[in-house]
Image 1 (cartoon, rainbow, N blue to C red):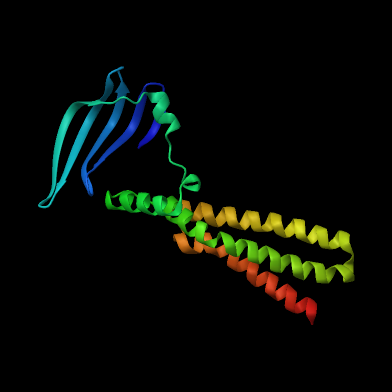
Image 2: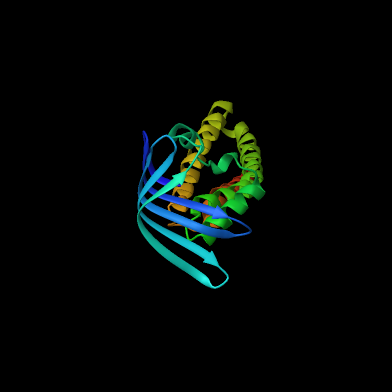
Length: 193
């Protein structure tokens, strides 16, 4: 991973090597691609074995790589495109290596919460269709559009708080669906009564 990738230069580089668990982690302040690999500068190499962690510092380190800067730029991991099991493993590996995985944990909960969104919207739609006879179809459609926009705003706010680590992953992903399911049930009961 890298904090920034610009041309043939990366800043804040971390390289992980796994072999039945994390074997080695290489961190560098900067890396430059020279055609045959990445030249890392201000390097710390962490070796993990059964006895603990050993740390070595080096001014420079050559990391042979077949991946060019263009290939690395395309290889960013998008949690929305990963299957659930792969995403869970990826988040666990990041946490074991000492990196925050908030974004990936929120996405895991989001994948589980997605069916509840459908249920919440169905209940909201049912409640609004009952109210239609009282205010007309146009008013019911306006309510529906307003509720969808409001849902989207609340969901994006909670997800953003979860990605940043200010809200734990479960409430970040489940908060909006549960809130709007509750609102739908309340509107449904109120419309019936």
